[in-house]
Length: 372
Image (cartoon, rainbow, N blue to C red):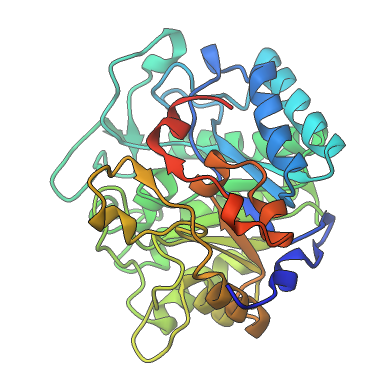
């Protein structure tokens, strides 16, 4: 690395959100919250990343108050007295350590149900058309009443986040989950007002959820939306095939109240459309004028996956930080999401800032399977 990473350590402000630097801990499902309740260990886990120098933490996906929103017993909830008390502890710990935090609110939609159901986690999968992918049906199509209740649940959870001391809220609208199933034509072939022949028409569910949330939290509380072109069901999907369609999709969401778009790519350096080196976050910022977060293999030597015999380990690497900083300086995006590198090494931001890249820890699949 030759570029000074100072741009990564400049402050960022959006409405009431104020963070000391541009490094964001990306949301990563960990499944360490028994019966949906975040524990003291979960609070300590997030505090360690704040102490290590992260500016903003977007917590792991948490279930809204809707049957079947998630399907595993140890995924946290963001509703109910005990889970919300646990989340208040998490927010307090992170703020005390000097960082900001937002919850990621989640409904997985129609997804294959996992085997370990308990109590209220047995809810049937639901989605716009009862479809998980082009070839797989799971659960049922949502009624107008189901949709209205789900929108209200996202708004309530966001209002709770504000009340508990979180700095913003985020909706998980990426990776083939519920919001994304509304966006995607193979999962949404409704003929009513919640469907339509084009991406802009199929965005109504997300737009209404954002509008309801804006009414619940007020004008100054930031709303973030995580989006992606790729899906867990199909890595090659592109919802928007060019900048014009991207603008038709996301412009109305920005108008509805999205303040920051969290743009998920598998590799941040991959151009989104031909004829430009802009990545997804770069194009979204260009077409909407809103701040964006870029994310995708930051801090990892991804080529290691194809050359090393032990693919459960990925080497820590800052060779691409020059390119990352160049794009940040150019104004392509505003914040940088870091995922697996922070699972492996809570002190990753401080080591980068202090020029101690040689001390960064490699990522192991075991880092995802244990709380530390």
